[in-house]
Length: 200
Image 1: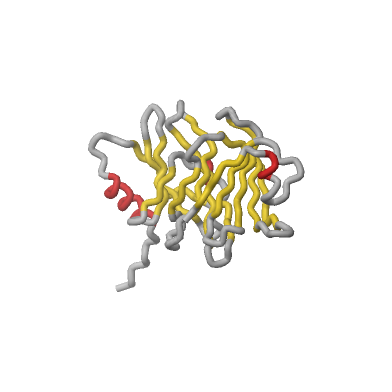
Image 2: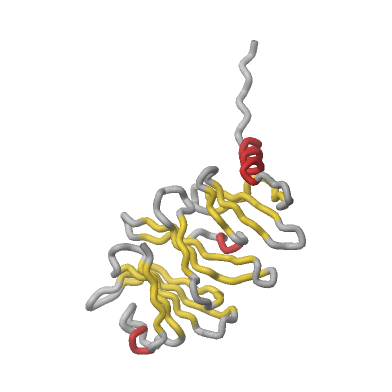
């Protein structure tokens, strides 16, 4: 279960990761049962415009904190920006953080962090924020992207061994009589390697 809170108090923000100059609005996400592991997002502007943000992931202690990694992102600060869904089919819901919108607000982009509850790690999925309106299809074990343009379309993705998304097949339009399962199944069958026929 994920928990998260928004903190705008300057003094309270210093209590986690002991930031000496905790400016902006802070959001804290606890992705594990052990609440000492915290992902903290520091929004440097709070006007719902795309702005600079710092993301920290670490372990908060009574006397000292340890930051495992930090990154800088351009993110739009909105409410309900945290969702979780299993994207690598390991039975553990992964963390998605809303980044921005496009297509007059109809297209949404996210940052994905794979959750490992046993090792208490969050692994950033590179280039996931380039996938528009992502959704994981458990039946076919693929990421389904749905783009809203002049002609709405679908594109399939999977994560490779390095946890980087790659496209599967070509995009296809969303038509009135579209059978999505049938299209996905057909694309995946085309990707299967051809077996060599035995010589007679």
